[in-house]
Image (cartoon, rainbow, N blue to C red; front, side, top):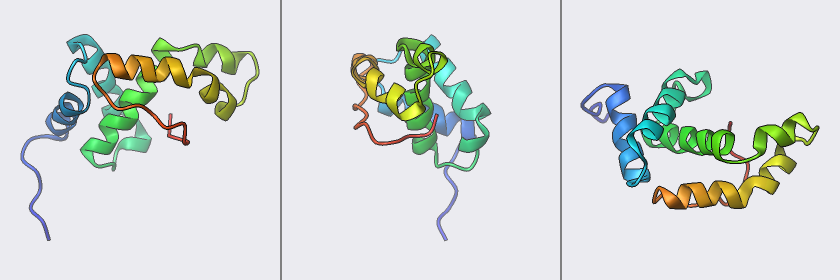
Length: 106
């Protein structure tokens, strides 16, 4: 059995966000961190996984037309396809690796 990581879950996810997206501004980091902490689907995820999924979902909803496409009737997969370039541009600006286009949780 491995020893638990030091620090609170919030501290571990915040550190994972810093490693994942080193140029992420503090206010964006706080928003992604809040998403990771408040999402029921990420409650049991490893900190690095929670950070990645929360950051991706945050960028998708805030920096792309994803929600508009859903409102227009596109299904999730189609909407994600159409916003992939904008999503990856936002991630690249923060120094984070791109999303491949495979399904990821919201």
